[in-house]
Image 1 (cartoon, rainbow, N blue to C red):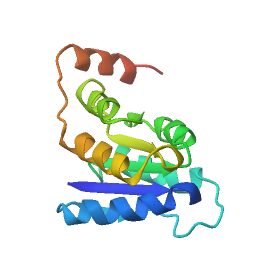
Image 2 (cartoon, rainbow, N blue to C red):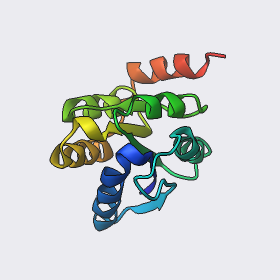
Image 3 (cartoon, one colour):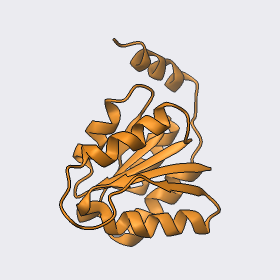
Length: 144
């Protein structure tokens, strides 16, 4: 699967770790930055990830920050993106199964490395349930 990934300085370490994890599991990953822990303004790195997913250039995106909140807000401003902020394996499973989330937001300050990997693995493996959930996504997408 083609994955776009990006972070601010507070999500940099997990971005680097998750990139390696995804590549080791045969995914193609493009890193949109940032490339260090030097302070940056997160929209500069998160919006391009979301836009690439929204245009269909990448099947999924992962964005990271300290809490993941700002990153999710930026990503969800892009048409065609459904970004879920996940804090557990179950929230990741539901984000995919019920919301067909195509972007995942994680907060490095609130997750262990093991939790982050488990969340990504479940999020990547879970299929969208469709059915009544598709009707709800259609309602979201029809909003002006």
